Amino acid sequence: MIESHSIHVNTKGHCDIINITPQLEGILSKSKIKEGMVNLFVSGSTASISTIEYEPNLVRDIQEALEKIAPEGKKYHHKETWNDDNGFSHVRATLMKPGLTVPFRDKKPLLGTWQQVVLLCFDNRSREREITVTIMGD
Amino acid sequence: MIESHSIHVNTKGHCDIINITPQLEGILSKSKIKEGMVNLFVSGSTASISTIEYEPNLVRDIQEALEKIAPEGKKYHHKETWNDDNGFSHVRATLMKPGLTVPFRDKKPLLGTWQQVVLLCFDNRSREREITVTIMGD
Amino acid sequence: MIESHSIHVNTKGHCDIINITPQLEGILSKSKIKEGMVNLFVSGSTASISTIEYEPNLVRDIQEALEKIAPEGKKYHHKETWNDDNGFSHVRATLMKPGLTVPFRDKKPLLGTWQQVVLLCFDNRSREREITVTIMGD
Image 1 (tube, rainbow over the protein chains, first blue to last red):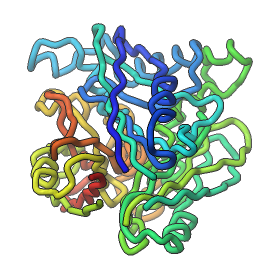
Image 2: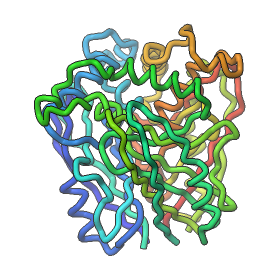
Image 3: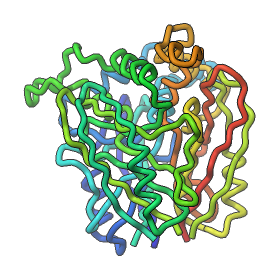
């Protein structure tokens, strides 16, 4: 069996990190599929999906780590193409990739107690993001 | 068809990298599913799964690369939340993500000869890790 | 339903980034499966798959970001094992992982307009790469 759903999120950009576990749990609990794998995928090339212990200080730590890897203030060649200032957003998104696949059982994701699924929005402006949620299993 | 299994591993933390290919191959060889994709997912927010040519010097190279990306000795904001000293572990795990999906055929993972599936444990102490192995296919 | 296909690509190495979206779209359009998830996986331990807005300046930005994370010129312990000079290639591949899972509907991948699926070849020489494309769905 297969089901396709969406999660919509408003983001502020600049490494805004949003907990989407409640939406994921809601979709799985109403699904006809009890057990399998669920893929979350954000279309667009300036965002990513991962997991984190979702607490504000760790969110800051991730933001600082990504600022070190691909700083906002650096000059990116991408600016020469469209005069866009979001080269750093693209670099972070390509490194972290746009999707994540999570197993589930009894209609619940098999996450740790301190592990939440998050959307990371790397763009330099606010966005409305759509995450495709594809459920496969029995 | 779908099957769900587990791999249990004892880790030492501090970027302990463990080859779990033998366990994965064992599970696939005994499965009723011949061809498809297998997802490996570690619950918890301080570990990851990837592939590597598993040899001790490359393991050291990865450990040094991750030490550069998120150093153990740095001060992390996460400490202010729980007084935990494993901020670096969380940052590494969020950047590298908790799962990996591998194709298989004839009950064997389609890995390269010099490519092994590994668990990376980033925590600052020894742990018993559970990896959920979800097999889907025909 | 499940289908297994391959994409073959000749690469130059040294962070050669190749757009494989046309090949992926071709495979999906001829598939009997209309909706589901497609996994792309490159065997070998010196390449990765991700998404990017595929334009030459952003390709250079990614190459520079990876050069900062795992420089070509650095000494890697891996050299002591086989006298290989591609330690940097392995480190980049383990950090970025060998696969990606993308949802599709109406036989088309659910990518953004400015989002292409790419193979990143990190090796220090030209290679012929095989990407396994596993399609599951209805």
